[in-house]
Image (tube, rainbow, N blue to C red):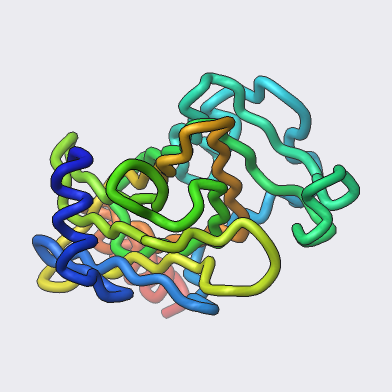
Length: 211
């Protein structure tokens, strides 16, 4: 989606929810928590700069990528200018952040802050995008991204009609020192084909052994 398309959306007065190809993206003061969670405070989790993209592959996220190549996880609440952040670790991605999943997902939520500021016809605003196999299946342009306390900073991705997605990206349009901060991620994964069948066979075998 280019700047012309984004400004067209602005002119139409985009609502707080959009849907494309069965993927709905909304933003609000809260969002549901799904089955798999990541808040960057898990015991033994990585912190610091230049964290490998695949550091969270153990929970089904094949890559989390900052667009400038420097994946940062830190508690910034005591850093001047960031005192409004919660007193816990967050993921910082300059120029935007992308999440790639090992298997398709049907729901995703996250708390997101971006310093792009209010959108106008030159800059500002941010976009959330859902993709499947490299094709955009959902997008949401947020005119007033939050970079401070309070406000609507929870994104929620849901699907209908059996749709799914395997990549999520957040991109702000700040001209100077663009930064995106993400926390409190959760998602539901589409079951791998055959898993339910294998589970059923295992339960049946166990039942026969008990007899």
